[in-house]
Image (cartoon, rainbow, N blue to C red; front, side, top):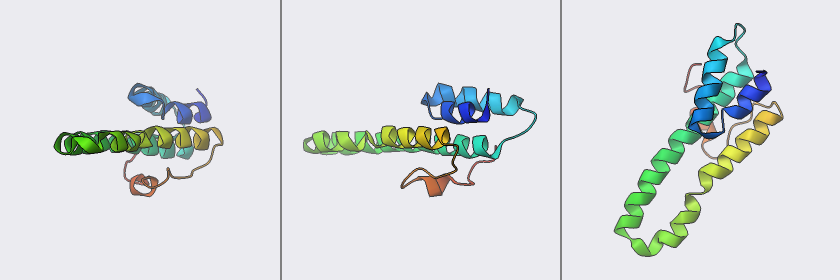
Amino acid sequence: MKAKTISIVAYITIIGWVIAYLQYKQREQKNELVSYHLSQGLGVFIFAVVLNIILTIVISVVPSLGSILVLAGLLPIAFLIFGIITAANEARKPVPIIGKVFEGMFNF
């Protein structure tokens, strides 16, 4: 696979991320673009898990906030779409709000 394709696949579900990671490890020449998007994609997935845990706890404590907090649960999807667009443009731009946290956090 090309570096651009691997970068895009890194944002398509956690299974896609694993496939992209395995493809990246098999490459002889490591690409900085792929490494960057692997770390951003993993960061979005970690954020999604943590956000869903927090939302579940808050909704169980205050059920009346459920309809409002459901919209917050869509935030990771927006981040994934942004990451896919950035990877398709072959740019190294962090995901909004959480992207700077995950820059350089993972070594691929």
